[in-house]
Length: 453
Image (cartoon, rainbow, N blue to C red):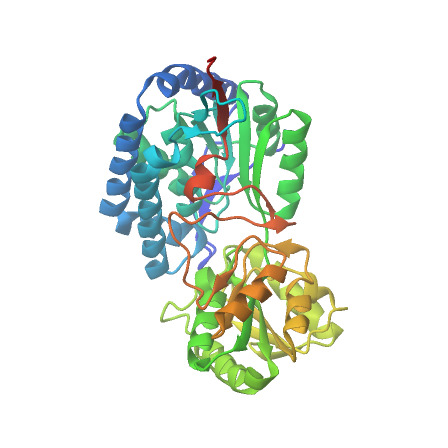
């Protein structure tokens, strides 16, 4: 069996701080049995209001401990402290929202049927759900996956990223302290082979993965082989379209924020900025100046998450420049894992970088002369997660949005996420939805009730 090392390695210094013991096969077996037993007991017999109450308490604990929690992920994956605190706060908002709206979202849904018989849909839990979560948002990803399932009555086994053992342990502590039974939420330091074992077990009813295309392909195939429900949230190369605006400065501010958020390591972060001719020169001048002024010391960005991530981004940018793209900001010469933000221009559709996801603070900047050209570039990648359209004519923006191959369209601003807004994509960005009512139904039995006349 391939051994996986769960350890905290500070990406800013490369120092290995703490190591954690990997799960044994016996611990995996015990976890599956314990989670199944908790589902058939606690998950089926407790009231929705009680489970929602535990979630409210968990949100309170996240808020009370936010500074400590922020320090943990700052150590684990290098997120700037201010952004780390913001992630904890948003996670608490998500948990609170699910708790407050669970009764509404899980209410019976009457159906109007031809024979007039009383018919409705009741939303009920499925059983044990495995969550395979990534390192880039250690709390947010788990909150949006685990809490709706726990409130619904499912039980959860968490396999977090190998570099997030401390945050995954503290999440489990908070959930248990809030009232969720220890067997209802189990944190496991599992190997890839053990993940396969968990998915194959008939007591496990589904798997949710947020991560790379490669991981999604493997997990999706295993879930399909064993007829398990699956949600995959994978990569993205989201476009930011500037079509027509009276406020270029606002567009620049939004684009910079979305490219540097989490040091560019967000699946739905703006990665390709597509600007109409009439605004391109002004936008490009102001955008490149702002990226150039971004400061590591001021916390505008942090180190990339690991040596592997730094090497991957550096190689991608090197290859883009070899193909003819121009690096107009940045030097592609990281100091350790500190990567100076950059901007690539002169990209053509035949270049490999045009269809890649750059998971770090490097933007691709495109000039276009029509909506059709903007749409063609926006859709010219294998991904289809989110998109942002800056356009004062909202009807025009909506028409363009209808042509975009993606799961989300934000019009007029980048800052339109919310704890009750569904999240997910199409194409190679995966399938299924998290957050909001749709997220609450991802691993639910939509049971049909019919009554004779």
